[in-house]
Amino acid sequence: MALPKEPRQKMINLMYLVLTALLALNVSAEIINAFKVVDNSLTSTNTVVDRSTGTIMESFKLKLQAPESKVKAEVWMPKAETANRLTKDVYDYIEAIKTKIKVEAGFNPADPNSTFKEDNIDISTRIMDKQGEGEKLRTKLAEYKKAMLAIDPEVGKMFESNLPINTEIPKLKNSGLGQKSWAYAYFHMTPTVAALTMLSKFQNDVKTTENRMVNEFHNRVGQVVVRFDAFEPIVGASTTYLFPGQELEVTAGLGAFSKTKLPTVSIAGSPVSLNEKGLAVRKIKVGSTSGSVNVVVNYTDQDGNPQSKTTTINYTVGTATGAFVSAEKVKVLYIGLDNELAVSGGSVGDEKVTVSISNGSLSKIGPGRYIARPRDPGKAVITVNSDGKPSSFEFRVKNVPDPTPMVGPSKGGRIAANVFKAQQGIRAELENFVFEGVTFTVTSYTFYATGAGFPDPGIVPGIRTNSFGPAQSVMQKCKPGTTVILDEITAVGPGGTTRKLPPMAFNLY
Image (cartoon, rainbow, N blue to C red; front, side):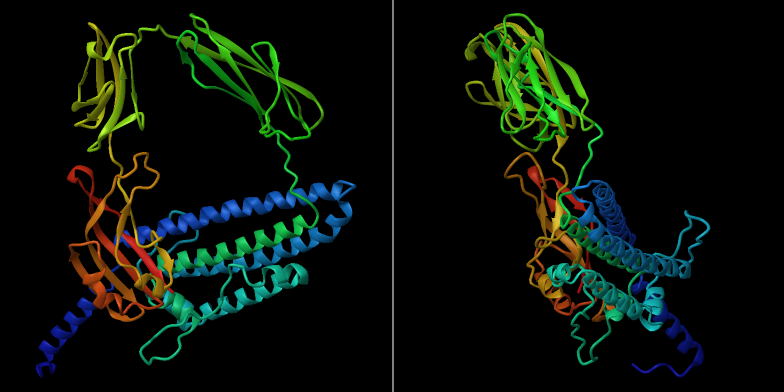
């Protein structure tokens, strides 16, 4: 459509187009938070890896002092120190880039709590792509990898093909626009927070590379020397509530022990030999009254000094007529699930036992077998009336936890474009949940794509299924450099309950 000839109307139309573009480029708070979570995770990982490398370097110092390892340590420790120096140079270089980007986005280095424009997509494009800082970084990473492999040719051959640093340009299909640069693939039209996350990823790559190389140099001298400065006996019992004639099984040993310095263990005044795991196990038949068992662990510490620690295990002996209730699967009752319970009236027959619940309903499915269906979160009291003698048992009541949205094996982050496009849809997984067979089904979501291949964002709102079928027209345009957001995800679980799940963000490469 041609622009109107009247100047005022031309200006109104242009302002509308500019406003529309600004709205299209707006990055949601959920996306920003998703990148911040990933960045914090990478930063924490870097700290853990750095601590591991530091432990190895401390072990090198000990090996320099030991006559049996001094000669080898003098050869390999300087190589490890070279790896430390090379890594620090690159790590600090990337940190300087991150600071530059944040300052450009409004960050005040003098104020650690200063904020900046996390959703700006021009700053990283200008600094990393147009000003060439990205290609300088690529060169720096390539030189670092080459220098690390050259520290020792033999070790270098071992790691030549499996170090995490990759400076290859992702293959972008740009519909005739030509091959793009490495910096373009990673930083073009990328929000500030996403660019910082990517730079943290490269810092993680160099820290991981350093750790692998230093660890291998150390292995050429010998195994890591770990000096334990705390010894703690491991003492446990099979149960602390028993009936007359039952056996009490006591397990005891020493945490952080060495096979060359095995402890000696005494349980209830009698020495007990150790099994192959360095633990002493003894079964004790209890009487009709409650009591305690003393466990004594004697050991020698690293300085050759004898040590001894005593632990007392107290136990209670119940009466033979005591009623009990136990959850078959968990110690918590879940709303919307069939919670199986085993109920006993002790010495009273099942026909003389009645059971009730204060929160929800109970169904008997067999002798001493019940299904509990709690109604409200909080607690439920199950009362067992055993031949006229009531006993109460309190259980916690919880909702089934929210599932985790997943696409293929991924929860979000970097993923190959062809792998992402081969996925069929979104699923909701209950991770590490004690009940088996509890499922959630994704019922709706919104598909959002921006970055490479999308001069205007591609949005498919209100998809009423878990399948990627309705979003195929947008999904097929995705390519390396595209950012895909799956938002407004809902899932239906046990009892027809609907859950709103957190958004997922994918960076395609």
